[in-house]
Amino acid sequence: MAYTVPKLTQFDMDSVQEALRALHEALEAESAAVTNETEWKAFRDRWMARKSGMLSQVNELWLRVTPKEFKWRVGDAANEAKASVQREIQAALERLQDASLKPGASDVVDITLPGIRRPIGAEHPVIRTMHEIVGVFQKLGYSVAEGPVVETDYYNFEALNFPPDHPARDTQDTLFIAGQQAKPQRERLLLRTHTSPVQIRTMEKMQPPIRIVIPGTVHRNDPPDASHSPMFHQIEGLAVDTNITFGDLKGTLDHFVKALFGANVKTHFRPSFFPFTEPSAELYVTCFICGGSGKRGTDPCRPCKQTGWIEVLGCGMVDPNVFEFVKDNGYDPRKVSGFAFGMGVDRLALLKYGVDDLQYFFQGDVRFLQQWA
Ligand code: 2NL
Image 1 (cartoon, helix red, strand yellow):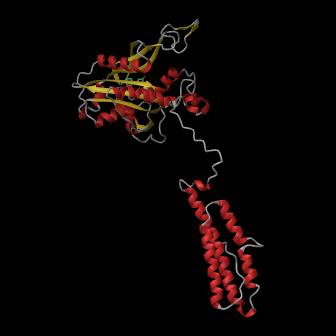
Image 2: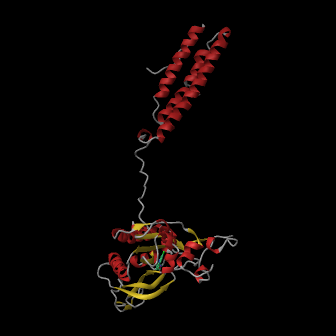
Image 3: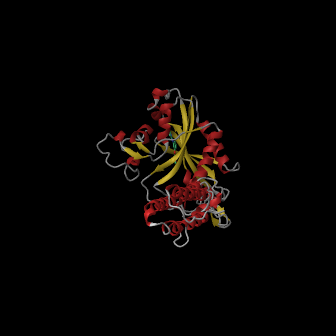
């Protein structure tokens, strides 16, 4: 039976206290039984409603019928009842809100509402390409190393055998951290322009033999266009041991290109120059768009500019001058040799997925990115 406020007939202390106790008991039991917002509203209205709520019944059936000489006593009891009702209504609401924050609070969820869609993300095409490339080298036993994007001139240029006045150091090409002029050149901070500094840092920490690949973001002072971006991604690799030869370089990179583009591509090395390798080369692969013919039907093949060959990376034998900087950690240029290579991940992703504008990779347009979902 639901509680109803009894009409007071006796006004001694014991009778008034007993009436108040019965009211409190009913109030607490009903408050504890509230499990959702609808029930809470019904509970609130049952006790607070202006006309027939329990508190207005207390006014009607306790206060109004009390003789003058007992008014103070019943008035106190009525005030206590009012305060208790307000406190319990607030407490029931707070319990409800706490419960709705806990997992499994299904009784306060309208299960007829549509669910919240949480689309699963997909790997960005550049990162996916990066993982594929790194994966090929990991299978060959290479480790992955990473390092800081903000570097010193020493690690980015000096230890890589760039002469002090090399044009790459110009602010036209490199993004420097402001306010560094007072420092000696080798300590000045900049955004790394390649991931090679991490190779130097790794050689400082680990003695040969080493085989590492370094993926990461790099920066150059280039305005964005279809083939340039001030931020892009690079992977460099380094193998150092006694008796590493140009033959090891050729075999490793030929395997890499076939793993990435398919076993039927052909490779070819062309002489080149880098300050940190000697000799240096560029690695070309037969165009996987036109199959090396330079033509797509009767149209000229664009990715290889009708040459039938696509440049994949730069490489070479580590220049002995580079080893001089880490000589004291076991890299005596008379005892060890090594090869190194570097490639632009974004450019390879463009080729691999047939995208014609680099900027699509960095604009974050879901309609573009959904193609890899
Ligand atoms: C390119 C060419 C290259 C390297 C990077 C390297 C690193 C050390 C020593 C010697 Cl510590 N070399 N890295 C070597 C040859 C080429 O990158 O076109 N990158 C996009």
